[in-house]
Length: 79
Image (cartoon, rainbow, N blue to C red; front, side, top):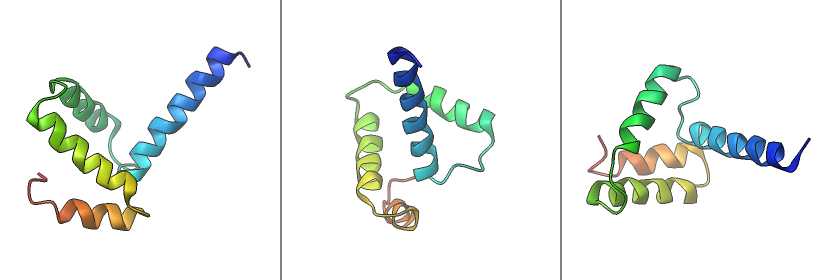
């Protein structure tokens, strides 16, 4: 396997882990892609970008999926 291919495989693995961490493994693929397309439209540095990034940082710090869901539910601005 080439170095470039190894990098691509690792990137896909990490992105899959994010989907797992968010509890979206059973979500419809079109739904996931639609959500990602919407996220891509958010301007970096905007208030919405910072808000979502803060939620993500909390989720990464949580020890498990249950803790992630508890923190998300505890975030009043989560929709």
